[in-house]
Image 1 (spheres, helix red, strand yellow):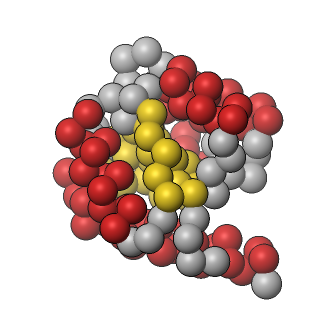
Image 2 (cartoon, rainbow, N blue to C red):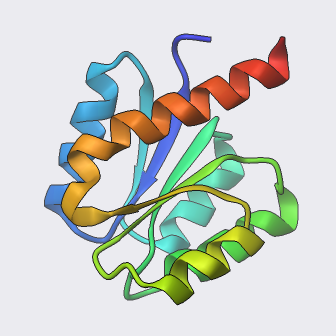
Length: 127
């Protein structure tokens, strides 16, 4: 399972592009959305293997987006970024089945570890 379809959702265009370039350089296909509503539209047509979501977005935040996703797909692995990590945010993430929670300040370096861990989890399910 080397090439996966990974969807990134973030309202900051520069961050979205940086993460998309980084993940695609590892050989994965990247789907991009600039907000929760756009992500839900894309998800109706494309089913990613992993969803990478920003926690705070103006049109529809990451939690609201994920709640909508979970209505039809409760198995999709999710990694969530936030610029404002706090204990409450991380505690609530368990209820939504978030695999990893990464502070945005360290996202560039930690996304590799979170994706590797999530990919290993997926590979175990298929073997």
